[in-house]
Image (cartoon, rainbow, N blue to C red; front, side, top):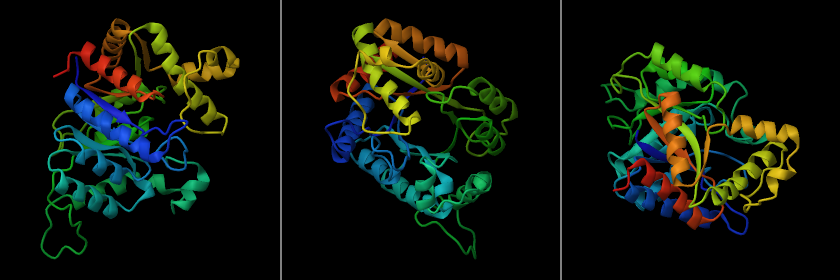
Length: 329
């Protein structure tokens, strides 16, 4: 089995708040560390009521301070929302506080709605500058040279692995051109998965950071002791996606066994499409599902996300994944 990692959105559930969500994220990271997961990544989203990881670098510090060995990082920072220098300083600070444990994944989407993107001072064409912004950011992690006018302190000379994230072919091309590892958001945007991976592998140029291509793919997994229980847990994510498409995002809802039967045909088709990279079931079902996903895609690493309403059930889901994958320490 390939290495497994965790992607967390710090979900805020009905009846809870951001403080509870952030504490649950750190608790999940502690368990993931003990179970043998390689990384614990948090994602930048803004203005979404059910996600508490907007200040991503701050949440990474919170999680890294509560763990000791697992790599903690961003999956990712939406770089066009920020100055490359500011991100270099933030992640240089994190790497100074937690040496050898910090990853920096970079994406170019806003991670928000248009009005919120404007409030972030993001230009409408900011994503067009993404390759240049990545190159600028990478330069700040290099050792400073005499007379250098702009420096990232902390940041310069530090080992902060940089990843490119993508949900289309653009990110694959940038990652290949710069010789960086590539993480594809197949857990919610699987349409171009195979083509993006093929382009990345075919066009990859070795770099000082990476000699050969490395692909990590997102996979939703809802694991429980029975297939029926896992299917019930999955309904929370289904509700979240339908509400998002309706323009009414909210807190992560409790499971609802009647929800699938209430879906309109186009909503069911939408879920089947965007959530096609999802494994739901009891341990043996999950083992087969992950094996099939890796064999079909050629993933070098899988990053698992599981938007489960109940924290204990969420922990159990990740524990089952680790057990069937043979990564439990």
